[in-house]
Each structure stands twice: as structure tokens, then as C-alpha cells.
Image 1 (cartoon, each protein chain N blue to C red):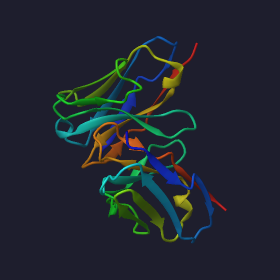
Image 2: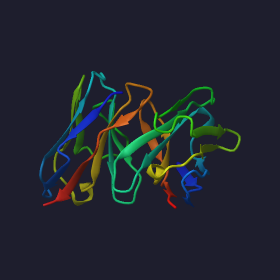
Image 3: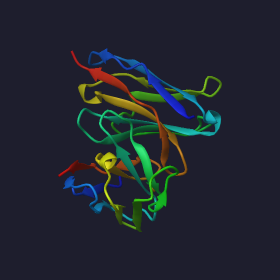
Image 4: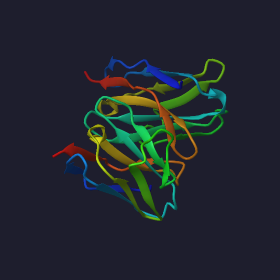
Length: 108
Length: 117
């Protein structure tokens, strides 16, 4: 199975900050990497697919980079609605699909 | 508007069974692969099962193999998860999610399964 490791596990930041979350795969997954945002009590929401493509309707302050084993999600200027938990997910392997453990982004 | 609506979650004893449903609207269900993903209380996301649009291809997580069965009825635009031999560690919110192009592009709101004596 492909293991996905996110860092940090939690992060405190302020509105307006630039934030970067990293995700590392245990083997090369090319660009088969997606990012999701989840707010408390809600379903996850797709933000970035194929490592760097912005899902329709997602603000342009979100961006993704990387390929192979190392990936990043960047929020260029944090907004109050961005405080949530973020998950990476690999889709290189059809089964099992695996997620990172999540990064909780909190208000400083 | 795309809607995926799960139902069937409940409190069940260890060793019991439960059947979850996911009703789809606003998507071409018969052309969509579908997944079940779960989230234990306070924990991260765990993929559970996938079924192709036709139903001919199925994948399951090792943690549920031999106990959970995914199925679908394209005429009813519905996805199912038959859960047998339930364990305490199966306690979670269960989400259905549509298979986009190598991603999960639409999710339901989830249904809570609690396994406890």
C-alpha cells in the first residue's frame, strides 16, 4: 500500500498569512495527488486534483505543486473560511486509495 | 445540482449487520464509478470500497474484505453498502463519493454507524 504522510499535523496561522502544507508519498505517484478541505461536521470538498489543477469554484488563493513523491498545498492569503482540516489523497493505486492523516489549520 | 444522500446509519451490536444506501441526483449515475469512505470519530478519512459504473469492477479495503459488500442499482440511481459482522472499530461516519477523473469530486453528507453493545 502507498502511505501518505502530511506535515505538519496541525498549524496555527492568522488571517492574511501564507500557509504551506506538505504531503509525501511512500513511492512515486506521478501527479495522482488530490487535496481536500473538510470543515467540522461536513463532508470533504475537493480543492486540487492532479497535483496542481484547481477544482471548479475553488478560490485561486489555493494552489498545489509537486510530482513523484513530494507535494505541497499553498494558501496564499488565509481567509477566515479557510480554517479547516486538509487531506491529501493518492489515486495512483486503484486500491487501496489512501489519504494522509490530515492537517488541522487553526486560527492563531 | 448534484446531491448524494446517504441513509441507513444506526446503532448496532457487534456482530450485527446494516445496509447503507446512497441516493444520487444531478449526475449521470449510470456512468459514474462510486466509492464509500468512512471517518471514525475524531479521525481521518479511510477509503472503504469502490464499484465501477457497470458494477463489474469492485475493490475493497483489506479492513472490510469478506464483511462488507458494495453494490448499485443504476435504474434507481442508488449505491449500497451491506455491512456484516460489524466490529466496534467500524464505528464511523460513512460517506458516498463519486469517482471523478482520479479523484472524488462529489460527496454526500454522511451517515453515522455506531457499533456498540
